[in-house]
Image 1 (spheres, rainbow, N blue to C red):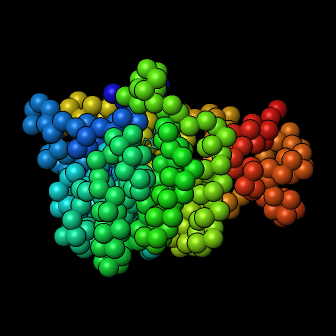
Image 2 (cartoon, rainbow, N blue to C red):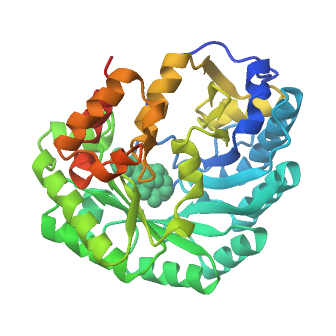
Image 3 (spheres, protein in one colour):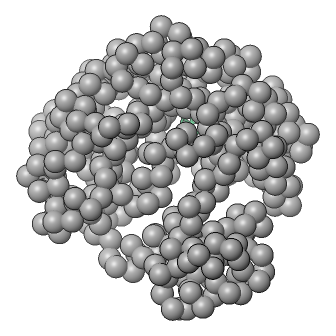
Length: 409
Ligand SMILES: C[S@@+](CC[C@H](N)C(=O)[O-])C[C@H]1O[C@@H](n2cnc3c(N)ncnc32)[C@H](O)[C@@H]1O
Ligand code: SF4
């Protein structure tokens, strides 16, 4: 089960973008996202578009996925060319899922190679794949490194077996340091993902997980608060009283403790849920999203954004593949972001990052609210004097409320 898609306008079969998208393309970087919609098992809390099935009909399945992804890559290059939005080497590439490493490493390598042949890569481009600690071998990582991947993000989630069980995670905690070490030995940058606030998780268990992640010394650590997504197995378990969600105060304590431990260990926050050892180890790909740049999302259900046009692909792998095999866009629908929506998104995303949101981007009521927000200890006084809105620790805990003030009219 995965969430409903937004409704939008019909997407043209030829994928062509309006002239406005091409006209301003040179002002933005272009990134590539490749969604791999396969997992060994579905975790009870996850509502990403992913399937445990191996194969559907018409020969569409896990082992033919790379062929269809390559078809969409060729299609994307042609659309950008015909829309006047080409000529930009890739700023970053991110293979996410699902579980990209459910595909043979050679399939990931071949998909990346096609993207690079079609678009080129910026100097120093970041090329990441997500990986589950139990679904990757040292040889796989070597194949990926040789193909041009520069970074691996491992789904650790927790170091505590009881918490992993609540989350339905199947991996063995001891595999995490092993795969992180392999990646480092191969010269790859590393990141680990943690989930904070699984039902029944205690502050001590959270501390154990954060300390374990720090102990593996990755370049980057993400810590996302668990979202109980409607329609998931976890949501049903909570509704039946089988699990009790962590309350907001405990979530806040966990965030503060996580930030404290990570800071002591030399990690710096650069986005509300992301910490890195320095500027060079921040995720360039995620920063491109938060800075509203362009990206093409390959794969079933993947979202794209080019020059104020956003579209999303058909969710199911079967119709997705069949459209591409017929030479037709796999987009389900698209929308043109109006000035108001673009402004709202710019403020919402910009306020989350530690580089700060330039004060001059705010409309007058939002600018006026900044004095009050600083007095409340929600944004930094010093940054404000330099013309930037940057959240304090307290502001990060109340990020949504800060954004509401910044968007006030
Ligand atoms: C969708 S997964 C894909 C990568 C890989 N399959 C994995 O699980 O690590 C990317 C990240 O999203 C996180 N995630 C998925 N559902 C979430 C939820 N409901 N709340 C918070 N984080 C979630 C996962 O824990 C994971 O680290
Ligand atoms: S392995 Fe990752 S993508 Fe797959 S179901 Fe679990 S959290 Fe979702």
